Amino acid sequence: MTSTEPPIDVEFSRFVDCGKLPSGGKTIKIEADAEERAALCERLSIDALDNLSAEFYLVPGKKGLIVLKGQLKAAFRQTCVISLQPVISDINITIERKYNVNAVAFWGHESEPDEEGHQTGGVQTKNLVEPPEPLENGGIDLGEVASEELAVEIDPFPRLAGAEMAASIDFGGGDQDEDVKNPFAVLEKLKKKLE
Image (tube, rainbow, N blue to C red; front, side, top):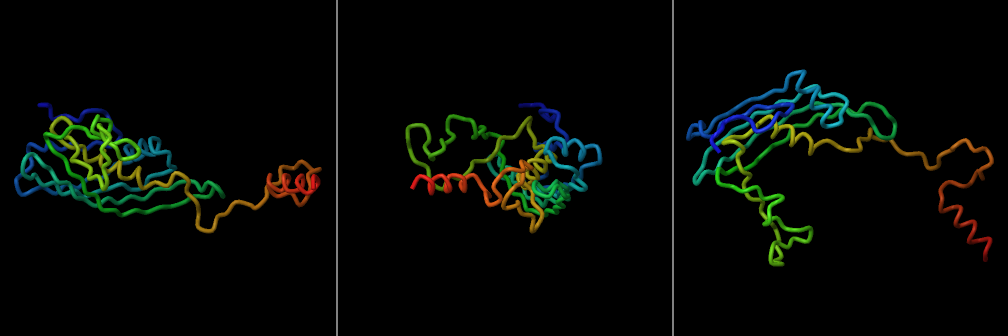
């Protein structure tokens, strides 16, 4: 690939042409603006993203290898699935990825193992080391790297500390037995009647 443009439109894009990296590496700081954070909220199904920033260090290696190391910081808000109150989260995580100019996309490729760890030919693969990711259009979109890592950190079912479901739920039927707290209690009563 000879183009050095980002491959697709994403909410938070900071494309780096890896062909222009100095041999000693380069530090790059990125931060999402308000518009980018709002678009990411929609993509990630969160209520608010107050901050998203990262500092990356990219180092070119031998045989087309690019090593990316970084620190991601984010502050976001979700809604508790039990109490419907806001859940505030702050993350500060370390990121490390490897890329290679000659890499082939592994996931979705014929060499990807199945759910039991077998690759083509039925060979079992244990402790599989993920190969380097391929560069897209000769570079890496650091904004998308940050977005992907943030997505992994978001709890799909956020809960406030101490929030618990009620042991029984009153549906307002009025004529329900008071001591029936779950569907299995009904089965227990039926079993006793049949004995």
